[in-house]
Structure formats: structure tokens, C-alpha cells
Amino acid sequence: MREFIGRKTLLTGEVGTGKTKFLARFIEYLLESGYEKEVTLIDMAPNRFQGVGGSVKEYLKDLGGIRYLRPPIVYAPRLMGRDALEVSRYCEENRKNIEPLLDTYILNPTNILLINDLTIYLHTGDLEKMLKAIELSKTFMATAYSGVKLRDDKGSGISEREKTVTDKLKEKMDLVIHFYE
Image (cartoon, rainbow, N blue to C red; front, side):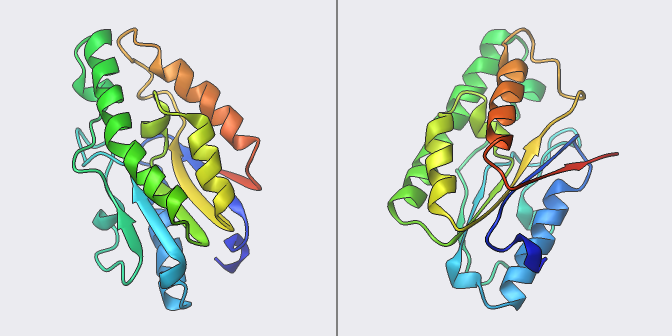
């Protein structure tokens, strides 16, 4: 895990491929190595819904002294929304709930920034704000959905935006690790 220190890493893959579990293992390494005061974890993942999603806390109960930021509620837009309007509404609610957490980090950054399920924010969120947060960190690791199981966005267009924005984000990374089923 030491090879990830000082690098920008994006973990991509289909639902259920182990991205969050890997992030949790990296957190364990950081805790064991004495980095906990240098870490901010922004947990953007919705609670597990229809077998999809899940907080880092489902894999790691003790986060030590890590600064843990999580919105009060996160929606799974494509699974919960019944039509394009509802999917878009859930995405916008997520953006409104998550953006203050990014602002908190930007105003008071730590050396290490970890994000679970950053694509939830990027459905409608500001890529430039995300990139600013990433640039403020010396070490960055995040999970990002990339697959076909959640492709049906009820005509909202978020799946295409998610792919486009994630591809732009990949260009800024030192490492992109894709998890396969």
C-alpha cells in the first residue's frame, strides 16, 4: 500500500467489484502507519440499496482520528428514481448535500484525501471544484463507478455525463485501477 502515498489514484469498476473494500484496506494501512491526522475521508456513497452502494464504515468500523465527512443523506438516483425528472432531482439533492463537504476540505485541506463513490457528486457536481480538492492533496484515492449495470438512467443523461466527467478525471490521475468482476 505504500506505493499509493504521494500519488493520485482512481479505483474504477462495476458495482460489487471490491473498490470500497480496497479503499478500506488503504485506510487500515494509513491508520497502522500513523497517517490518521493527515487524512480526510469524504464518504459520498449511498447506503446499500438493492445490493448497490455502501459506506466505507461497512468494511471498517474504526476510523481512528481520520476526519470523516459524510452528508446526512445520499440517494441512489438511478435505482430510486422512477423517471428522468426524479433521477435528476435525486442527483441535484446529492450535489447540494455533498458540495459543502468539498468546500470544508478546500478551506482546510489535509495531505491525504480519500473519497468513496465520487461519481455520485459528479452526476451534476462541479468537476473543477473536485479537481481543486484533489490538487490540494498530496495523496488522493477515490472510488468511481464505471460499468453497465447502472446504465439505465431513465433518460436523465447522467450516465453519459458520469462517463465523460470520469474520463476527464482519469487524465489527472497518476494511477487508474479498474476492478473486474
